[in-house]
Amino acid sequence: MNLDDENAAVFVWIVPEGAEDIRHLSVDGDYVGSIAKNTENPSAKHQWSWRVTIPDSVDRNTPLAGHADDELAAKKAAEEAYSRARRETG
Image (cartoon, rainbow, N blue to C red; front, side):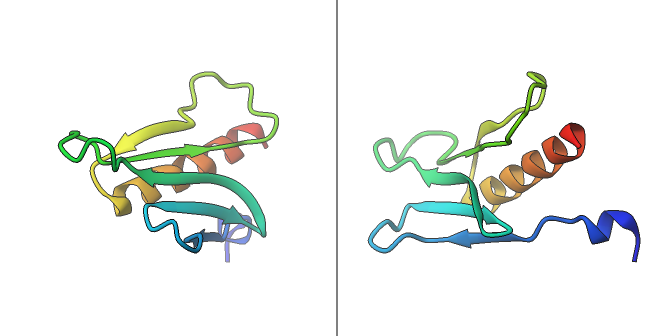
């Protein structure tokens, strides 16, 4: 096992009861972000948006929010942004 594997975040996606279009992201038991489906505009190009929160993040070049075409792409983008920011902030 290398150091990256040992420090890898364990992502858990939680679907709140009664909120089918929202997923909350938890890492090590802490809330770090969400994804949500755009239910107000079903013809929008990107149907899902995502946002993650990184404590002590000062790098303005790291995207911590965005849009995706589907739920899986939104989850992947949020996880990648969190992991990248976590590496950059040490």
